[in-house]
Figure (tube, rainbow, N blue to C red):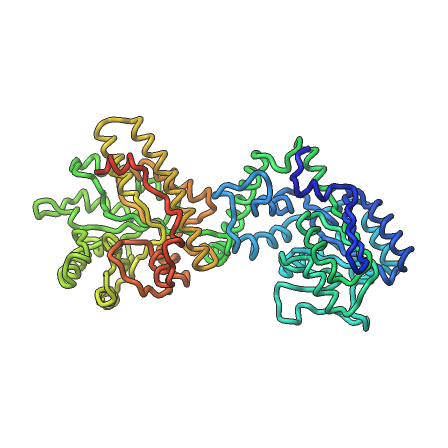
Length: 580
């Protein structure tokens, strides 16, 4: 059986520490409640029932989940506390995990007793006059499901629970801390240090006991109780490390708590649950902290062809890109450079037809200027004249489908390298009815696309495949990176806006890119919905020459320095060489 070293210390049959003032602290390990019952009865005989306090954990101590999803095992896997760690695409962010997922799964799931004799033991202890209550790491928000599952399994902790010395109720939740709640003999602490929580509730009660017995399945919790034991003012403390559920799991799984196959099923079950809930309750996509959302924005329409003027090639590549987005129901927006619609001063109808196909498929279009000038290097008038020149044909195509033309994407993401330049352009855009289309996930897809084009021109299919695989891997790292920055800045994963370009690479790998985001539990939204996220009202007060993500801009504006941005994935050197 594979057991961690920290567990080994607790698995000694009995560890007894006697403090200088005579307090005895014993740690024992058991898989049987009959042994706990015997010990409790000995304490009652030794000290009398009114001088003995029994504190029980809930998860894997009183109750255990009937399914792996939502179980204590699932939680410890998500928190990286098992030998098998979740991959980035399997791990929930803290905001989702603690503020929605845990309580949601308690509500939906069912639980069973860890020991069928437990209801009888608890009732017997209470009848003898023993004070009994539960101390759980669950959040108060999970109280309804907690009380339901205890009741369904015949457990009533409201009888002979811990009260004040005057026999009045203890009300933690009236002290203004929403993370703590004590009702019906259930003390809910939302992951707080259990040793300290027991100290606090004993002080609030004004009571003291000669003997305290604690039963908990968490080795860290047992350590915390032991560390805080001196504050309990009890002369005899017995800590039971209850290992039945973990021991049974290790036996069933040949020495491991979670296999890779079981982890994959956990991930799949969670994904299917979220997908089902969001399809039934579509408003969850914008409001749930577990429903990640992304807008795909694609620059340089109709196509970055790298000099290939053949209409059949450009139309075929564009059609594959549009078809993938449509079939996967991704409401993307493409940003147009209208100079690509013109050759020798004349409009090419087939290129305008590509844009027409975008709109007829339900996709949106925005302005990316006429010829992609760099705002860092041209005057305000030259840039804004180019911007206005780039709107005529696209606006007409959108109007034909009853759509408005309102989004603008800065070429090179250069928004103005001084406050004056940035403010002037913002005022111009607002006056002309434009809304800036920001980017939160920036990347070097254009370098991969150029390298892919080089391999295509050389008919090197093996190299094309290698570039494609590395591209998807790189894009996953970029996604995880910007998620982490978002969590650090906002404490959550905001609605993301991905920037990519209209290229052969993205036409060939769009299905895989979409699957990548789906594997990370993303839902696809349009620019309108993405910008409803209040994060996009965050002011930018730092102006730089570089074209960078808005997450980077917000971070710089909040005074974040170099170390905050560490871990940004690097584009492979062979890609840079090919793209030169």
